[in-house]
Image (cartoon, rainbow, N blue to C red; front, side, top):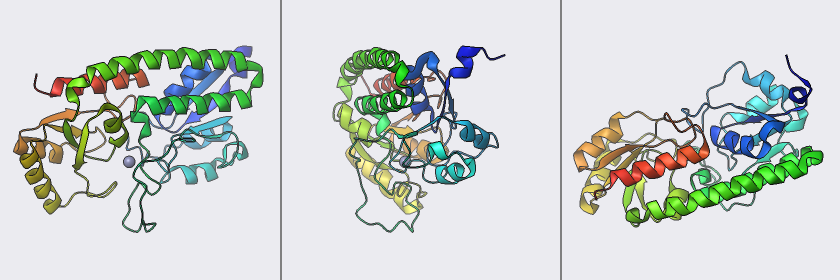
Length: 288
Ligand SMILES: [Zn+2]
């Protein structure tokens, strides 16, 4: 049975597991966070479950990645939720991308080909420095919603940012051997990560974000990777292993399975654990 503290908790729905974890860290015991995604889904297409609508209907706060990351599934859910508090533009609609400049904003506004990055690349949370902006946006929204708990939220935020900052120093140190290292991935998840850690993003197996590869594209990619000696193929768990595995085999590159949100692979339940995992896996993939 819910006690008084339980009943007073702020009900947060987060779209993906990364922003869910960040919200738990800032909100602490004052929030109850449910994530629509479990971590293994495509970030652009979390499959609808019947429980989503009542969850959203009761939510005090909606936390999302933004830059159109959720544009294929969130608008319909929000409409069905019949919850006026969390609609687009309302203070409880918390877009964590606020204040971040997107990379790869398309020059064309014609999205008829199905590109799933219509507003630029939304995968900024794989850069832990930009995750700090998301933490601040979440903190601002919680303070606005429950100003009586401002002191706690700010303390939680400061504690978490201090832990994150210490981790960032360690990750940057660990990633030094990968300076300039080239890699390809299935989906364009990694431009912010590559920029932060000095890796060189050599292309994606997908033709464009959300568009399956053609045999010709795969052939060209294999030829280019051989010519450039690209040592790493990143495979995200959302996508089938067959093509990345074939490309790795044909080029002699190492295939590395990396989560793109917490819970994507075992032992990555929190954002910090996920980033630890990614750094460890990449460092382990380069020849000593
Ligand atoms: Zn994407």
